[in-house]
Length: 255
Picture (tube, rainbow, N blue to C red):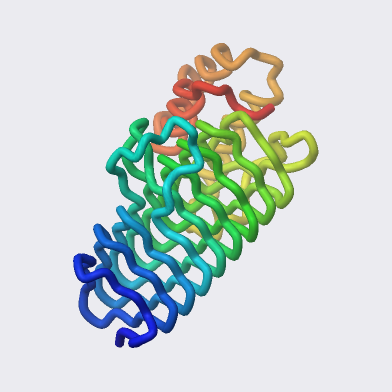
């Protein structure tokens, strides 16, 4: 399953049933699990950790050193989970001393030209559109959909089940369950279609909708809005997540 035209460092650890195409480069200090397919001209560099069942398309580069001038050659990793599709020319840099690792979880689709910078954390079940660029130490929670050509400022946090319009750029956090779009980027309603597809009950969607009406349309400041939600809404995982996300946001949320 390993082409004689591929280079695999003798210290690299390769699992079972791994297909490695011609002109693939696999460095030392690399661990690759079972049932992976690595297509031609992909580069799996020092510090890469790849789980099971992934497909890595031509030209992808995983584990390159960070594009961060503070990096001093410290040991770090780029960690990919299971069952991801990593399309052509995706770049996933390894971590720095800040966190030590860059992580992409399970069941994600990273489309052509996506860049995942040092110390980023991408959750599970996310779809990241063509040529979207993530700066260092961003966090994307599970089941987010990020369209093409989106630019994310360093340290930003994107919540679960969001939909971000193509071509957006942002430097504040995007709270869960919403659609973010327009120029400049702004709250554009909740992601009703996405939530229904994910099996959220109508009453749960209505509660989320009502919570965001208070946050974005009541005229209250953020602290007052969150207090009103806590006082008036029945506790639920979704409402707790919204409150915790916004309350813990260091950069503030989009308006």
